Image (cartoon, rainbow, N blue to C red; front, side, top):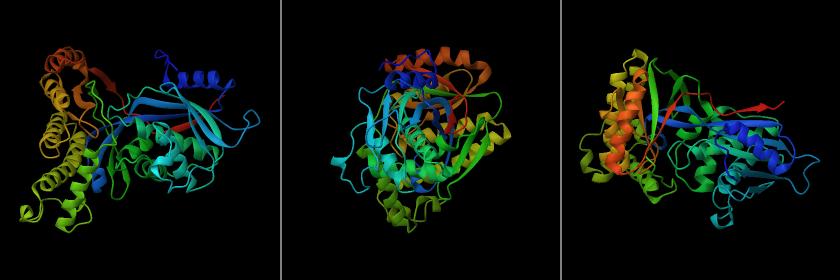
Length: 396
C-alpha cells in the first residue's frame, strides 16, 4: 500500500480502511510521536524526563466487528507501510508464549498490546487501517504511538479506557515482555499524556506527569539525520544492565536515589558502570534545570543544558554516533540556535534543537549545508508543536 502523503494521516487511514474492507470506519484513533527534550536513558533508572508529544501522528481508522465481518474474533490491522496485515486471534496468545510462537515484524507490537490488554479485561474483535507521519526508527517513538493507539482502540471498543498511566504501562509491557525491547516508560507516558503547548516533566519513579509550558518564541526543531537504528539491540540492553550494576554496587534500588556519586565510588564499581551512573545522576538534575529555565523564559540556559546533555550522552553514556554529533555541532553553530542534543535511544536517528522562532529560516539555511558537508547526507527538519496525547473519536 503506497502512502498518499499530501493527505493527513487521518485522511489516509480512513481511505485505506474503505479500500481494505469496503465499508466506513466508526472510530478514529490519533496517537502522536514524541521528542525528548532532556532526560535520556533515565526512565529505566526511575529518573526524570522532559518529553513532549509532537504533531507527527499515527492514526488508526477502525470499526468493531459485527455482522459485516465473519469468522472467529480477532484484531486485524492493515498498514500503508506494510505489505501484510497484523492479525491477532482473540483471546490472544498466552503471556508465556515463547518468542518463536509470536508474530514477526510490526505485527508483534499489535499482538503484544492485545496480550497486555487481555490481562485487564476481555476484548472484542475489530478491524482497522493505519497511516502514520512518524518516521520509523528515527527515535520519535513510532512504536509507542502504535502501542498506545492499539491499546486505546481495544479498551474503548470493550467499553472502558483505563487511566493514562495504566494505558502507558500496558503499552510498555507489550514492548518489554513481548517485543523484547528493554525500554522504560518515557515513550508511552509522553505519547499518552501529551498536553498542547507543553512539555511534560515525567517522574518515572512515581509516574507523575506535570505539564511544563514551553516559552513563547522558541521553536522545537527535530533534525532527522537520515540514519536509522533498531531499538531491540544488545547495546541498549547493555546500557540498562550497566546502570543496574552501578545501582547494586552503590546499594540503591535505582540510580534515581542518588544526587551525586558516592564517596570512593571508583573503588566499588567498574569504570564503565561508573560513567553510566555519572551521566544518569547529572541528567536527572538537568531535567529540572531545563524546566526551571523554561519557566523563566531563559532559552539560552535551556540550550546550554541540552548541549551539556549531548556531551554526556556522547562521552559518558556512549550512545551517540557520527551523524548525531555532526547534527548537534551544525545546529549549535547555526543562527538562532540556543542548543541541541541527540534525542531517543541513540546511535542513529534524530537530534533536537531549540531555535529562536523568528530566525528559523536563517537556521535552516545554515544548518542544512553544514550538516551535509560533514556527513554527505541530506537532513530532514521538522518544526514541531506540542500536542495532546493519544485519543479516540467517533466518526460521523
